[in-house]
Amino acid sequence: MASERQIRVGGVTIGGGAPVVVQSMTLTKTHDVEATTGQIAALASAGCEIVRVAVPKLEDAEALPRIVRLSPLPVIADIHFNASLALKAIEAGVAAVRINPGNIGGPDKVALVVRAAKKAGVPMRIGANSGSLPKHLYELAQQDQAEALVEAALEEVRLLESLDFHDFKISVKSSHVPTMIRAYRRLAERVSYPLHLGVTEAGTPFSGSIKSAVGMGALLVDGIGDTIRVSLTADPVEEVKTAFEILKALGLRERGPVMIACPSCGRDNVGVQTLAEKVEARLAGYPQHFEVAVLGCAVNGPGEAGDADFGIAGGRDVGFVYAHGRVLKKVSSDILIDELFFEIDKWITAGMQRPKRLKMAKPAALAMAEASLIPLE
Image 1: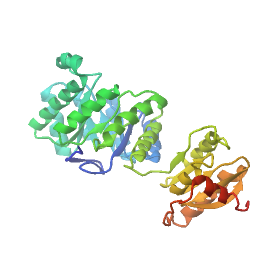
Image 2: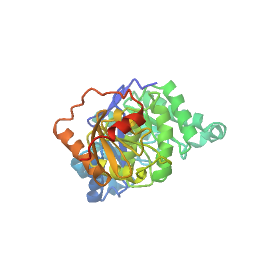
Image 3: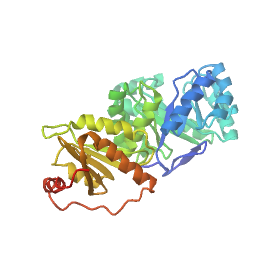
Image 4: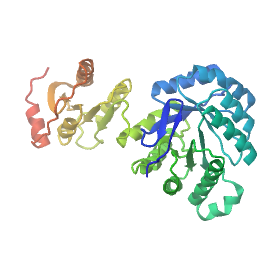
């Protein structure tokens, strides 16, 4: 179920029916202000909406006022073990703090941070991680790690609620995808607070993206989750790109083009893998949302291209450019991609008006055969 409560991190609304928010975390030493703000700028350009910075030392906390002032994104201070650093982060004007009430120094220290957060109007992220469960839940974790994650999070929720603080979101992250899915499903049934989704320590861009898509996608498709971070062992810009691809695949967010490409098979007449890779590389420079189909034969090409805003279907010597369900032109294969992007750019310049799409009534192979009669441009 979707969260009912809503919080605001800087100017970004999370939960309560707001669009799912994409966030990431810098890899730099936070006290290196130039490097940190440079990475934040790169994340902002990639579409990141909230950024988290690690604050393990006093020098990192002391750098926060400048980072907050220079950052184009709301800054979350990530703090463990040291309540005084959380207080300094709040004083520095961060948009939110991420703390673990179980390791910040006890209920009295949590109360200090909560009082400061309430006074400043700063929300928190709390929650549990399978790698750092409190010791008294170890036995439960041996029986059911998902339930242990949920119980750890609920203990934190009860503590904050006892302090009359409700301005927070929750995470129950695990590197084991089935555990993560079960934990978030159970938590969503028991709280109304916004949920921050993630498969923690997901891995390299290849395996980590797959694990994140499976874990978060299984929850998001059912309306569970209000903000996400894809945790990759990679440049954090890759996290943002992957996050938006997950959301675009589910129809939850629109940012940049969506490419449809047929799989390689024995009917491929053009080398569709190479063709698709070239198109994908050029599409990366477009912030606008539209669909492009890249097909390699006459079986599915016309049908798939007909459903996209633009498409190309390749052949040995010639290819076809489609626009909004119609065959637009037939061109030689060596200029097929250039002609596709010429038409895309022309359409964007004209205001991206979409005519009523026409579904092809004829079999795809017949439509391709008729298209082949178009004179070569």
